[in-house]
Image 1 (cartoon, rainbow, N blue to C red):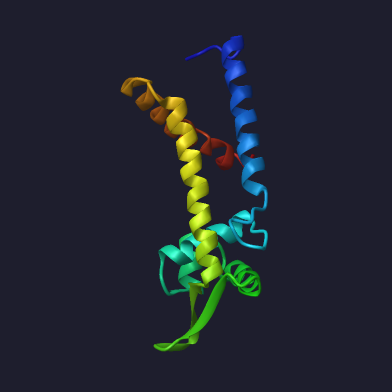
Image 2 (image 1 turned 90 degrees about the vertical axis):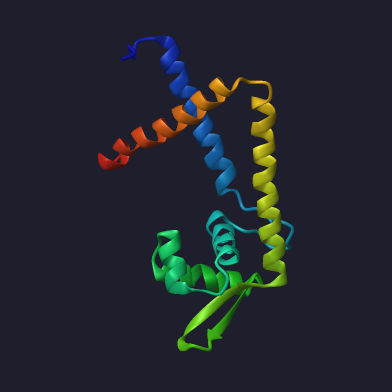
Length: 157
């Protein structure tokens, strides 16, 4: 076990916190994704879930996203007003609506995918030339760190 008084480990933890803050800052910023309307994190990820689960109902979407049906309904209303999704009555169950992307929603989805491809490209360039061993270490380290950080949630932090 490493000694926390060691300045190198402290610097690593501060670098990690700075990186996390930067990622959160990038993530919470509204983006247009090729449309004429700003989209927030929850909205673009709902668009992604709708695209990848064709003809999904609000209840199933809430289950997939791990949020309440009320939250999904509110975001769906916003996305419908923005012209990004279409709600159609389910012919098999008149009390349910199917959610589908509009043409503008398809554009937003495609540009969101491009955003992630660009991020993947940055990482690929940073790791270019590194050994398989170093890359595997990095993957394992990040996966273990993510798992270990669950203690903060468990303790209510």
